[in-house]
Length: 208
Image 1 (tube, one colour):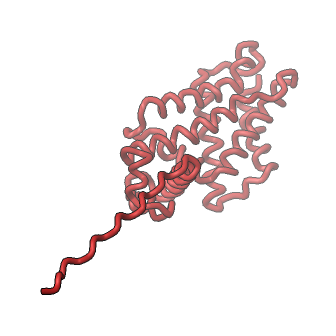
Image 2: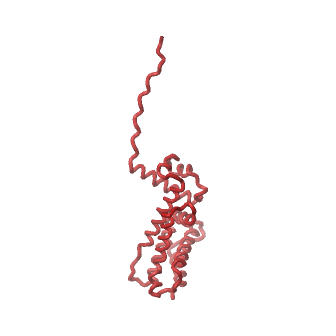
């Protein structure tokens, strides 16, 4: 009688572990895809499989790097808000007259928003989301403090009009983000002369 038992299947070779560099590269692709989709569609309108497709990874890969979709949102927000804050905390030459320092800081702020359109749109539209955790909210507060620092010392020396620092920070933020929004929609060309002209208008409201 012929033995019809199939031959044993040889064991498959073990899958080598993913290198740290490869894992980091995938994580960055996920962050980049999350930023682009959240900025253009909004967090709630974006599904995790869409992010996976945009990042060219499996959906399960996202959950190996981020436990939940909320965790990905917070990672994207914290990264970009911290980057913007770090840029604003880099002060120019403090020996310059206060008007020149303001002009330089304002220019850098708007250029950042102009040159990072997805990050600008994302931060502007997601800053008040309930899904943001304390680390992300703390990053927002640090950014507002950095904005206050643009004119805080000048107010202390009574070189410019006094106003609540948080009001000044809000005006600066919304003016910069608003210009960047208009540039994204094609309402204006956000050239350096336009940025500087807007800064002069703001300065007229601050100068004594």
